[in-house]
Every structure is written in C-alpha cells, then in structure tokens.
Length: 226
Image 1 (cartoon, rainbow, N blue to C red):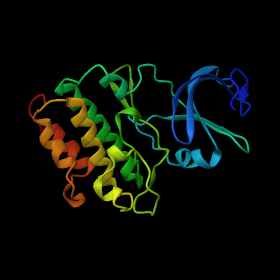
Image 2 (tube, rainbow, N blue to C red):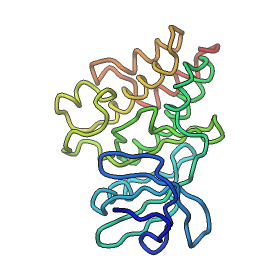
Image 3 (tube, rainbow, N blue to C red):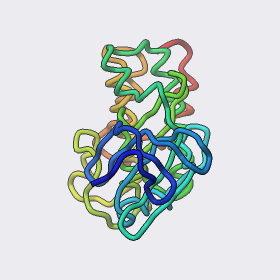
C-alpha cells in the first residue's frame, strides 16, 4: 500500500490520487529535489519501463520530468496540468467546430512526431489528452505504446481500437489516426464539414486511412470553421 506524505523512491511525496489505470495510479505529488508539484505515475518498474523509454519530445506531447525507482516501485513524474483532460471538458458538452479543428490539428502534429519515431501510441482517447491552460493539447500516457509492426498483446481502450487491431493485427500508425478521428467525432457532437475528414480517418480499411501528416494537411486546407 502506498503511504502518503512519506517520500516514495526517496524523492516524491504523494498528496492525493488523481487517476487510476490497470497497472498504475497517478497522484498529485511534491518533488523533493525540485520542490515543484508534479503528476506522479506510480507502478511497478516493469509496467512503467516502456512508457519511460517511449518518450517523444514535441510541443504537444506531455514531457517527462523525472524518473525514480526502487526494486518494487517506480515513479514517472510529468507536468501537473491543472485544467484537466479533454474528457473533463466534454462532460460539459460538445465543442465548437473551430475549437475541435484546432485541437485535432495539435493532436495530429503530435502523432506525426510519434510515428516518425517508429512508435504507435495505442491509446488515443479524450482521457489521455490534457489541456494546458484549457487550449494547448498534450498527448499523454504512453503506457501501452509499442514499436510499429511488433507483435504485442491487445491493449488500449476497446472503444477506441481500430477494427483490425481488435482482430489481432499488430500495432500500426493508422490505428492512432483512427482513434484521433473518433476523438474528433465525439468532441463535435453534431454534423459539420470536419466530419468528412473524421470519416476518412475512421475507415474500417486501414490502407484507406490518411496518415497523420496527410490528415493534418487536409485539416489546414479546410477553408472555414468546421
């Protein structure tokens, strides 16, 4: 059992739990070395090692700030984003099309960088999209990320998995594009011109989906608010 208010891995004081997944918990914590408040993801080293290794530096990817571990527990510290996630925002209702267009553009830019590094995020969904200051999107949680094409157990959120991944196909960048299209459709909540792009991103046939870069170019070509 984790003990609050006592340093974990000799460095992090856990203050309150703010999230929970299958293999880790996320806490608001204080970093004793930097004296900053951070989001501390806590789990067993073998569960967090992939997330530590699969980091991508990009303005729209949540940066890792620190790592600490003992034999039985590891802590991955990231920026503490007070504004919350896109999922939190959508609880208040759908977003204006122009805002969805802007956020989708940021997400696609992040995915271009992720895919260029040879990775597949594998769990693109509103709960993993943080909104710094309410408008700057940050792609988070690389806990199930894998190398493209490598055999990997089925993981991620079932409702956001591409059909071929659910059928057992190996991870592929097009599956992240599919999930991003689902995110945009959910955020819109109503028909709009942007849905044409979302429809192309969520085609069942993987080879007919645009890449993240192609979808980003098409997004910029849209002449008006969507």
